[in-house]
Image 1 (cartoon, rainbow, N blue to C red):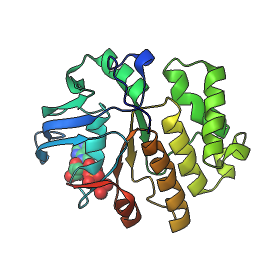
Image 2: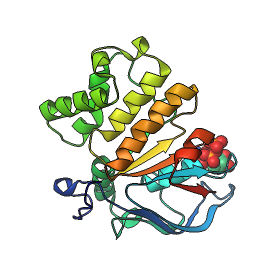
Image 3: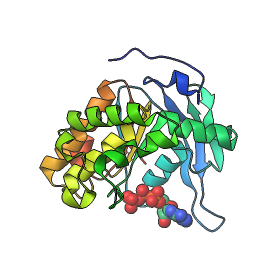
Image 4: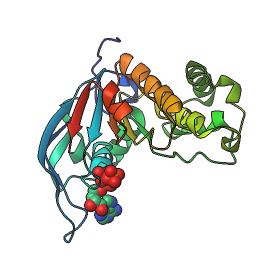
Length: 230
Ligand SMILES: Nc1ncnc2c1ncn2[C@@H]1O[C@H](COP(=O)(O)OP(=O)(O)OP(=O)(O)O)[C@@H](O)[C@H]1O
């Protein structure tokens, strides 16, 4: 496993695996008429580990990923990334942090139908200001790692659902994020494809990344290092 590195949060030069993400006294409500979620949750997610977020439908698994991903602001409590209170940062620093430290995988990731797979994989890197040439190289390497390099020039319509989810993993990893947040990444996959996606996330964890997966899939739970039930 790669040694943890520490740098200023949100500084692209210090982008590296090995970052803890935590919540402290977390509460969230979507509005005055909706129920409060998380009941003051305090929890720390360590690098190099996969945590499965489980629990009945509606308990807030997806919402927790959005809060951890700094797309929703806690009603009270904090998100702490690498020791810094990330949820209190100004918008532009939160955006930088999101672009450089966090990778996202959503269920049924919608890849742009008009774009080649490779271009979809590099897109988050372009948003983060990366060099197209470096990104293409990294994207090819990632696709190769997950057995998809021969699909680089294909369109999403030409690949299977399982392959598309592995492309989504590549897309989430292209910025070499410290933390990967995945929402039901195996939701609609058969056991073989589900297993390949879990392998891909396991590989990312072995590189020292912090992996959180919201899931109802027993296969994910079985292979997680830790289970947090909401
Ligand atoms: N945009 C929204 N506005 C208002 N309420 C919302 C919104 N999104 C989700 N909710 C509500 O917040 C609660 C938590 O939803 P969330 O999707 O996070 O749960 P979940 O545990 O991921 O569910 P599932 O297992 O079904 O995916 C639910 O009661 C849901 O109806």
